Length: 336
Image 1 (cartoon, rainbow, N blue to C red):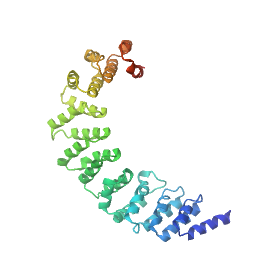
Image 2: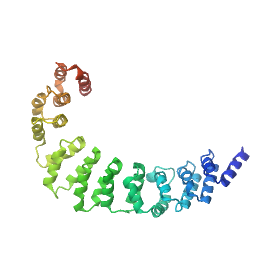
Image 3: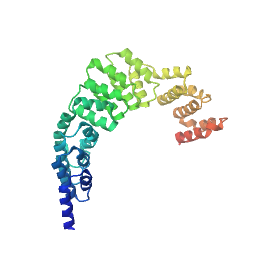
Image 4: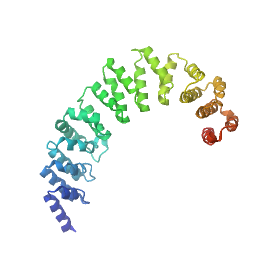
């Protein structure tokens, strides 16, 4: 067995093809994997980068060390597309997610990566590459302050396809000049991610002294938004400033409008727990729109839980069979 292992190590030490080194670098023996990576470092062939990158988080410390040394050796010789393709794999060790302590090695590696790729390439990939690669590029741009905060925020919000990046960008708006913050918050308010819209709304409303009238208009519009957390932020902001949120929701319900808006108004009125709203809510349990009826019944129960038997009877009385089963399931869940 010892002779067999020694033979494998010798073979790994003298291998020159991608196929062989890839095979030896994945061997079950850490000694063989380490030998293969030492050989990769000797050859310094950029095409071996995938072999090396795969072992950066190896469970054997000596193998990890060999992989990291090999990567530093071949870094400057590797073409930019190849480096970029493996950037997420290389930088996955950030934040303590890898085995062992990678901080010192990353502190050496990242400036070399930046030198090899250049800020323009990183910014372009942050803007256009897939989400995993974009996150890696944005991480470098942010950690090393390669772009002004305003440019980085604009870049990330312009993508709009990654909640992690977009949410981080909203948090970074505070680093932008005060005169530039409002346009960025407004931009983030158009995100299709609810958590991003909520964070943007909170940030915008926090700077109330700049444009109180405009902020109130934004908050009022958010009262009927689809994100409940954003509605809560808006409701809290307006209530502190003496705006009658309850009256606003009652007014909207009285005006009719879209079913979705009516559902939101009913849910918010119910959350305010004012018994004076029971009559208004009851008036909508016979609405000709299924989801409005369901929202009205749910709001009624939230306002007067003791009426649950009556609510159940109303729900069953003369309702179209097509939606009765769904309604009963929803009510049972809420009344249980």
